[in-house]
Length: 458
Ligand code: HEM
Image (cartoon, rainbow, N blue to C red):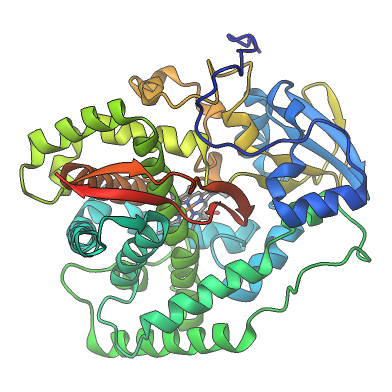
């Protein structure tokens, strides 16, 4: 393929924070130490300059940054590249063989059943839940005394949204304990997942992978009880994700989800949906604080449309800059910073031999900062997305692509723009000196230390 850009200078002193990618080859022990610090540091700097990198750390692996190759793995030959075993090992204890981890027929019927749940109409109908969460976030920030950890605040706001659209009536569903169980689980399980993916031998010590078992079991029990209660009560108006999924059936076989299948998929929506959206929002706010000029323009756009109102779904077409800021935050800090697959058959990727059993890593972080694909990749420039069609499809993959593309992408984007525009219209955000967030990969790409910002009422 043609690469339009040559390497750009890194000289600019004031760039938003980034992950220090390593520049020298690492042995297993060094890899392990790097993975303990930050899994993303296992991605070498050269991955932002070449289309593919291959190696062997216990087993053969390839890191693929070439859009054509990515299309092959994610779309054209998707059957030959199922999700890696490690992905399943990490996620299965929490979310069972649900949509996110299932393969083959077990995935197909669940995807067919869940797809209509996330139709444009259904997602738009959930807009008021997002508007209400944005409103409550404004109230909390107004009380915060001017300085707040926006990551924590966004985790609260997005958890409210996902809890309200899954188990909205609360029937015995203790949100605080569910939230805590999921947070603990994410924190405890996936610290070295890229190292696992690269195939480090099993004698390499791992952080405690023991699932915070009882908390998660308790969560599943609560969810089952809430589902049974809803079955007895009937659907609400407007229907939430539980109602929609419960009413759904596989259009091919007519099969419906059991309570356990409903529960695993709803917990999947919670795990996959809330922290990722919170990250998008907190990185977007960090970037706005980093670039006051962009922030002012976005505020003018939001205030012109909203006045004193909180944003709603109907406002979205009038908030194009807020949307571009979200797109650019997803480019610079993709919450799912790498995906991984296992090759099932012999293949060739970018001229490289791929053997059955090889691990294919899709380092989205490196793809999104690739020197040959993006102009000034480390700079914050929301206008790259002024014409979304101008960005080649497999060069920008915050939600993956192909049949396994994120089912909640439009839900997440709608929520992020509603909350971001509302906050920008009401507050001016500025960095707190000495409190820069550090991007660290723990299952998702998180800001270590939080995103501390001054939030001043406007
Ligand atoms: C900004 C927020 C989000 C990001 C960045 C994100 C990212 C992703 C990515 C990259 C994948 C593909 C993984 C792979 O191919 O290995 C994925 C899949 C998935 N996401 Fe999201 N996601 C977000 C929000 C959501 C939300 C809000 C929901 C649900 C309410 C959700 C539910 C799912 C599910 C169920 C899958 C598996 C789909 C399948 O395999 O058929 N995600 N997500």
